[in-house]
Image (tube, rainbow, N blue to C red; front, side, top):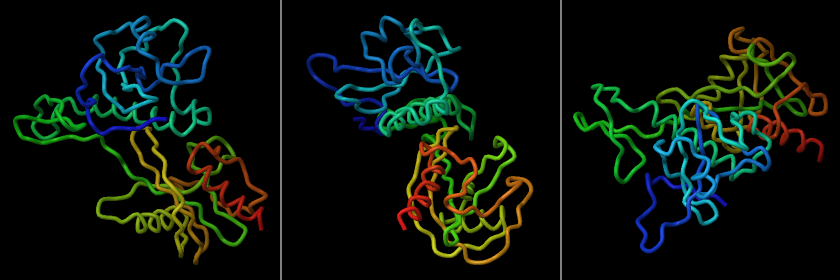
Length: 275
C-alpha cells in the first residue's frame, strides 16, 4: 500500500532511522529490475547499487511502512541487474498503487528541474521547509508542482460511441476525445467546447467516470461519458483527422484498459453487453 504525502520530508523521529526505499528516475525513465516486477528499491540494495550518492532526493510518502523517496539521477547510469524504462511502457504492468507512485515520482522530479529559477525575477529558488514548493526569496513567489487538467470523453448515442483518430496515433487506432481545460473554464464547459471544436457535435448530459494522473509530463485526466445531443461529425482536420460512430461490438483498435480512455470505452462496452 502506498500513502502519498504532500510534505517535503517526513516528520522527525526518535531512535533508529526509519526504513527507506527509493525510486530512481533519470531523464524521465524509471529504474527497473531485470528479474522482478517494478517497485521501489530498499535502502540496502540502493546503497549497494547507487552510482550517484549526491543525487537530489524527494519524499513521496509511505510504502509498506517505509519512507519512500524519488532520486533524480543524471545521464541514465548503468546499474547492475537493472534497466531503464519509460512509464508508458510500464502501463498495464503496474497496479494502481505502483502506478500512482511512479507518476508522482516523475512529476516531482519534473517540478524540481523546471523551477530551479524564479520565472518572475530569475533568482535561484530554494525548497520550502514545510510544503512541497520552491520559494524565491527576493520576490516571494512560490512554485508548486504543476498539474494541467484535461477533460477526456467518450460520446455515446444508443449502442454506438464516437471515437477519433489523431494524426499522431498509429494507423487505424482510435480513442476518446480529449483536451486541456482553459483558464476560467469549468470542466463541463471545456468538455462541450472541445467536442464541438474537434468534431462539430453538441452533447447533452454528462456522466462523470473517473480520473487518472498522466505524467507526460504533468496532466490530470478527468473522464466523462457524454450523451450525444445534435449535429453531424465535422472534424477539425488538425487535432482530429477521422472520427466515426462505432457500435459497442464493432470497435476499431482502441487504448488498453490501463489508460482512462480505455476504461471509458470498456465501461461503455460492458454496459451494452450486459443489456
